[in-house]
Image 1 (cartoon, one colour):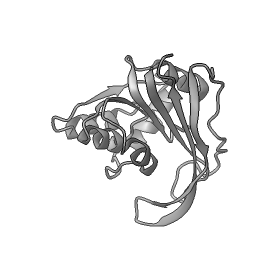
Image 2 (cartoon, rainbow, N blue to C red):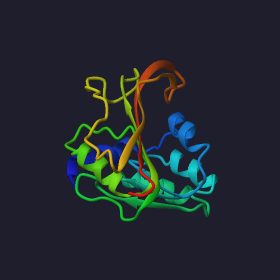
Image 3 (cartoon, rainbow, N blue to C red):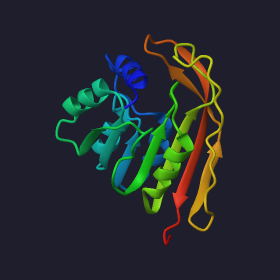
Length: 195
């Protein structure tokens, strides 16, 4: 694992933020029947726990040891499997009905297109990949100077269809209670049922 990235994310999650689900995941996954899910870059685990409380079996992957350990202690018997993994070097095993990549940004080298392509390969037929990226930075974010391109990569149209590709705005609440209007980039991809 990359030492500098590991130190950065371990420090970032030394005191994990309050548990809450990302709103676009709740919007997309809320009406879906429960199945298997992979939460890439799970952070403090709010999404994984939200999914598990709705009957999903969740693999929650992150580089940060404090995030993974905190999540492991908070599963309370829910079907969540926390996995410490460096997505720059490896990818979780398994196939999934839903793969969620919420704000999978890092100031360190990460071949995001390769990670997202592996995510599509990990989808079961009919499964969904939900990518939500920052389109703008909130005033409290660590990535104030980042460039936020839309998530894109080439997909075989015989195997995958894009169900959503847009940039909605929402009001975000920071760790100290401040609010700001931010833009998200959303990409929702479905693996064709028979492919």
